[in-house]
Image (tube, rainbow, N blue to C red; front, top):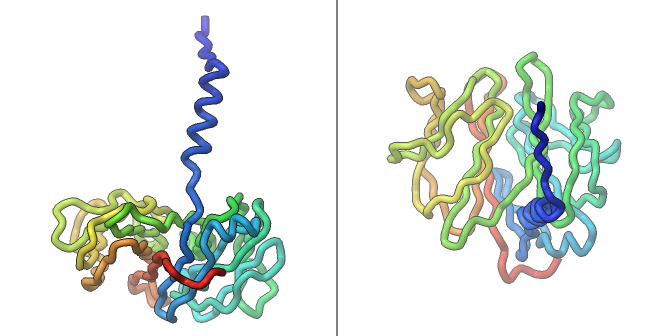
Amino acid sequence: MRTRWLLPLSGLLFVGFLAYACQQAPTADAIVSMTENGSSLSPSGRKAEQHGTSMVRLANALPGREGLEVLRDSVSLVANVPFGGVSPYVEVADNTIRFMLRRSGSPAMVANADHRLQDGLRYTVVALSDRNGGTTMRVIRDDLVPDEGRARVRVIHAAPALDDVAVAMTGATDPLFANLEYGGDAGFKDVAPTTAGFTFRRELGGPPVLALRSMGLTSGTAYTFILTSRPNGQLMAISFSDAGASGSPPN
């Protein structure tokens, strides 16, 4: 005789409440994003929520010479993002979206992904190589506000030649991220503000496969590193940061 477990209505309501409560809150401040190409300002999440929009950007981790363009249901959002580049955020009005990716100047789509967005929140579309020599994409939510007095770090594994990796801050005995699978990310982790570098190793051990020089990790700032490879196969990391812009002009 099979035992059936029934969740009372009150339990269902409680689970629903928890799911609602765990939704990320839109940022109160505008966000300044820093990439190798300079800075950009996007509106506060609350302002975007009032507009009925979410915010999306493209990070091009696909080795190659061509720029990339991401479209929303055949309508261009951002274009001509070079390898290693990260576009500014753009506002998107629809919540259920099919993102499509193509090389700039080409009509052929090379990847697509369906995703549901939430008004007022931010997302990064990451273009990356798959393990069959093709192209794929991931849509990752950007939870950019660390706990008070902390910095925030995230690593996205987009190097198909590597299996699971471990990432450690220089001087630390334990990895900050372990068992990080290709195509995945472990979400953001908050750390104490400091100056540190990062080492990437295969999870099974061995010498570092990539080491990033020391950098300052500032309170109130979120840092993203995308592990990928250059067209010649040399490993590299695309890095960018996001911080609240208190006192910035209203958007």
